[in-house]
Length: 160
Image 1 (cartoon, helix red, strand yellow):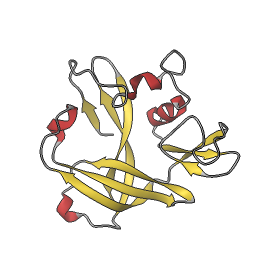
Image 2 (spheres, one colour):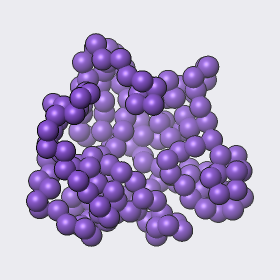
Image 3 (tube, rainbow, N blue to C red):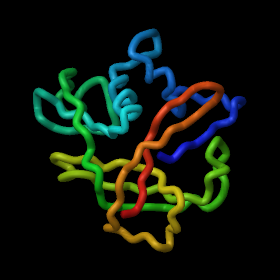
């Protein structure tokens, strides 16, 4: 499992730092807590609406197709296909400047769009010149330590 360690002194905006959303209860918790719990258990998940049957990602409190709040969590298929990508060759003005260069890829998993999702992920240790549209990738969960004692999880892609 890839691990990223963040410095203790970088305050992140809630849109960038979903730490509070990883709590099941409290004023900052959301109905997407299960998504973060699934990540901590090694699963990258999407939601399927129990009313209309559509799948959606990123996680949200209601179905974006019919506004139902009844959904179930399904694991995203492990292997997908690159639909688009770009390389970040220079440092980024936030916490990941130490990880450049890296690739940002859009990949499709499952039978997109009906029974699958299109998601964006970072690819570390991948030379963008070796990639092409249609290459197969797998998602993997990465552990993020910091700031401080916080531990959270996210995902990245790797070429297969």
